Image (cartoon, rainbow, N blue to C red; front, side, top):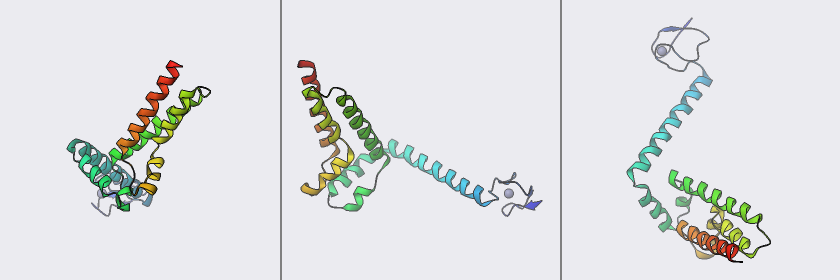
Length: 155
Ligand SMILES: [Zn+2]
């Protein structure tokens, strides 16, 4: 038997956690516990972030800063969600368009699908000084997609 360093109750030598106070007793258990706490903290932060509605203000500031490189690296949960959505929409559109490839409309769909991918938005920062807004890329995507689908239907 050994004693818990935190609450001094006697616990089994093999125990990973103290049965009395729950304190981790081994190195791996401590790391596991750490990860768990961090995950919980992130979840709480994400939940309070979406509820407050302050996210959009910060986002706009990050976009408006433009020349600030640091702001581009800070990805909020909303931005990550948007990025993931862009990837899904972009790749999904390209994959669908590839199955329709001899038709003219499919090429527009491919262009739109590529345009909405986040790396393309980052590329626009080169010639323009600051990356185009997400809304612009989504707009481009919508124009390409609608035109492409219209061509597919009409031709
Ligand atoms: Zn204890």
